[in-house]
Image 1 (cartoon, helix red, strand yellow):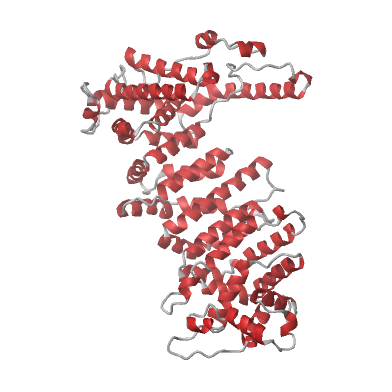
Image 2 (cartoon, helix red, strand yellow):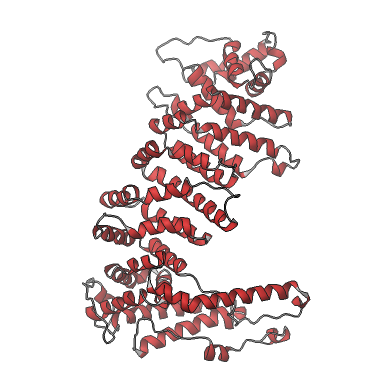
Length: 600
């Protein structure tokens, strides 16, 4: 490559293949055709990603992708057909699906040979770390197969499930497998050398030699190998993405063979979520649990069984135990603080997915462990944490969106909305210090306002007498609780004093409170009695006033209803203001005839 030579860089491909690239026969196949296809796949990938990547156009890339797809399909067919059982290795034959013989066109399938291949893989997986890398690469290539190649894909997944290969990953997660000892002996020293190489590279780049340094694109000394936990979680995440039903069946079969009827693999995933120092591992564990437990396409028996494993067999208890652990930066190392902090965020996101998916189960858990208020307090103690508060408010919003009377009463009983309004007040004071219009809001304030909008989401159904007004309990709490009432008044007053419009979400909630709680709607059978504007204005001044008898709340209500404080200060209203104000106040009354507004 002349361009690289001008830059003082040289890529010696022959030397790389002769001394660095190595082929590992993990499942001990001696078929030369299978080996040749594997070598061809590696070389094509090397050409596409390394050798000529700067000279490929879109048409050439598509052509290479097509060749790679055909080659990997042939590799999978040979893997299902020509898996020879090595000497001394036990073979565990299993009933291969009837459709697998039709997928091998022109080739006779051998059940014992195909099953022995995966039996070898399971045995090697518990001893050799390279077998885990092989399984990860196999699943990643399966995910790239087209829709026309689903038969081979499902055959591979069925073999993995029948041989219970995924259960061997338990030793990777808890560190008891011989493959973990193999990784500590062989790959851990290489990772330490890679860290030393990266430190030396940082010193070179920060020193004066940064301008003369030229990297070697084929030098892999600074690339560490993944840890056993990382590889195991990647395998499970890929399996959950492609075949979540088969992964759930693996959990079920494990629980049936356990004395306590527990799935140890699920429990280890919940434990890994807390103990792993890798953010990517924690995120993938969260994705696995959400895909397996909260899938909307499960049938009823399968749903009941996975819910029993998740809620009754210790998985949810393990997650809540991690969520309620104390988080104190002064008493923890920075790495431990970040690990637990990120784990709590992922757990709150899991709970937010569980609320709409497991309504009955989660209502029982709310009563037992007081999850909403403890989730909010986890972000407030010992110090206020905005990032945890963000995920906690999302979880509370999911609880409110259920529109369940039992959940709403629980939120009112434990005053869950009080710390949320306090957060909004603190955010309002913080962003008011900025002068730029772009910085007059924050992500936490937006999430809190979205949570409050969920209270008024069913406002259109409140007008129907037969509609259940579940969220009215929460709306009533907002304007009857002393703290919430004062903080809402302070928020609106501070926005007015800074020249901004009052919060429309809080104004809408207050209108709902006036219309359906403080002033219940009239029955359809009763005649309509019009009241004076003072009758409608007086409750708001009592409800929204930060201080009893203050004028700030009166100004706030008048600004929202279209009245001026000077017009209503002495109780004398002009006919025009009386007409417009009365129309605004009662425009949401369902018992008012549309003809009434026409004459206003």
